[in-house]
Image 1 (cartoon, one colour):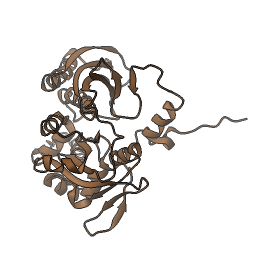
Image 2: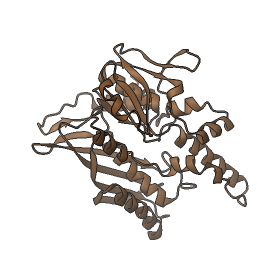
Image 3: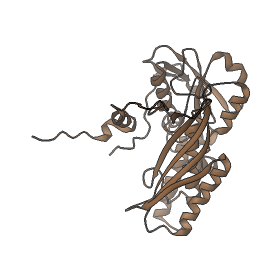
Image 4: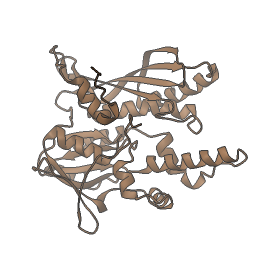
Length: 345
């Protein structure tokens, strides 16, 4: 009798996580929140929760050293982990860094990587406290674990959105994806003619969005200063549509956003058009922007309505099976998570 084989690609990243976590339950009273949010939540005394998250970057999957400088890679590896802690409304405090290296990497290359890690630690006030190194048969692998802290009454999950809440997003979207398209194009130009120099001057902003993203710890501080506690929050790592669906699923609500409210930088817009890509599709599904997507109660709208980098793009409603975008023409478009599948063949 032949064995049944199920392909991971049929599940996708989040389906695989659901599959793996099935049957596991929290057994320790110190484990407050396990799998299913941007970070795990652990009890840490009377007033605080400890936040814990981990992220892995694999050469050839998450980055290409043909155009990713090692110093930027080190910085980005830390920033994306700090972003997970920010998405819980917490502050990152420590990281551990584990590397798998091939013998093609020199000590000087490792120094360049750690120069970026050091710069990110300085910027975010994070301590490097340990890690591991081992050999790799092919390529570079970076795994970073981050711990952070948040007051128990200030922690924010993906699951707290309520009908009539306002949906907000920081910064602008789609830039990291379009920056990646520019870098890939220039790589192909170089491979066909190594004498050609990359033409990146006019794309500096979007290339920077891909190579050196920033965790929006500033917005976490701004919200606290304004006296606003989001009802739910997540960082935009897999595209706006995917993150909206996560909030909707975890909160048991529906979402409705408006196309003309989605923030897209002009360079992102123009370059997407140059690549014959729809800028809105790039914003919805591009990913790697590491902005914060969150919901607030209507009572808090006045407190942040004038914030220059927070955009109110829609609202939450009570029909949990309806996640919609209203186009500029007034057409109702169902939201679908069409971001990149790690396990696609």
